[in-house]
Length: 135
Image (cartoon, rainbow, N blue to C red; front, side, top):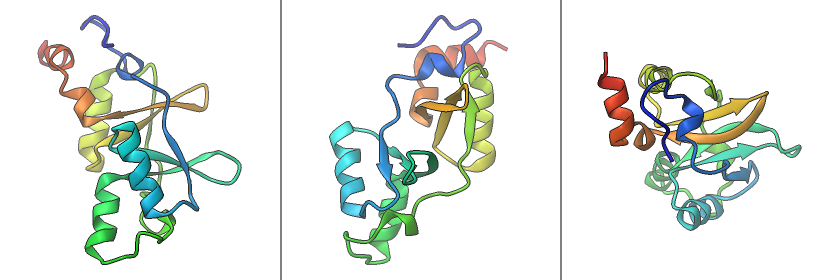
């Protein structure tokens, strides 16, 4: 769970490894994965398993509002330009990156590998909010 408020790092917010999906997957497969894992975003990987994008609930809603068939590949709707944060960065930096980039999910990396995805929900945890308000 969340570590003590002092010195709270991004890695302290990670609750599970990232849930990944292939860039060739369909909107329906992505929606199923989000539902199955009760999460709001998937880490999209290329054929070699390298992270290349994030696909969020917002992306799927956008596709549905455009009347796209659920068989449409997610490539057309995933958010490219992967924004990451280092696991040892402070949670303040995560909040800043989310706000500056108008995003709700950040990929957490350590040693060049994606180790998790944190969301805006992770930042509104009462322990995190107390930490952010301490200044």
